[in-house]
Length: 198
Image 1 (spheres, rainbow, N blue to C red):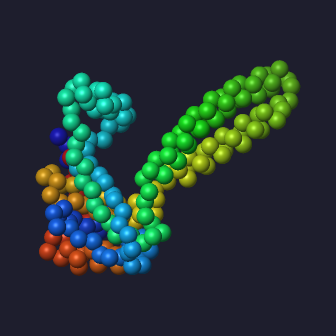
Image 2: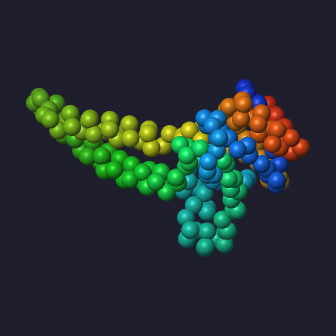
Image 3: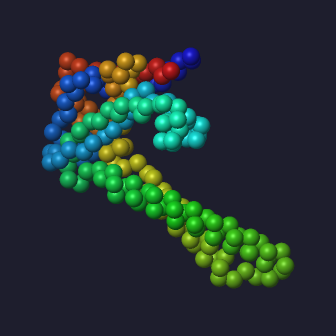
């Protein structure tokens, strides 16, 4: 097993999972928190280069191989009303984006072949080629909007867990919120500038 040392430009927080407390402040904008949102992650999850290489990628493969889904760790982070994460709406939007992009890419491929044929035969290509390029640019821009990290994910990012999953490493962008978080967990938290990842 090779060990990889990762160094961070800004220090990250190492905090004990049990008994972790959050400041009553939104980590994105710094206003007082009015709600809580869930941030879930799987401790010690292996990341595969391609999802289909993972033996536990599909539920049928997990049942056949007797692989149980790993337990997830969920943290309730206080946020303001503007930065509540709604997983269901994001999931629907991303699914719709993937389906529509698949159709648009297929239409764009056939349009590209038609445009290539027209150019090869010495004819000018018509409105269909321009429409395909326009739809493809809409598909790319909608994918960028759908799959970009949300403000809370950018401000409060879980880096990983230690080997026993007793400590979690969190990258907090706002220095004031980071200090408030350290004050809330002063006996169980510390700043670190590097970690070792297996």
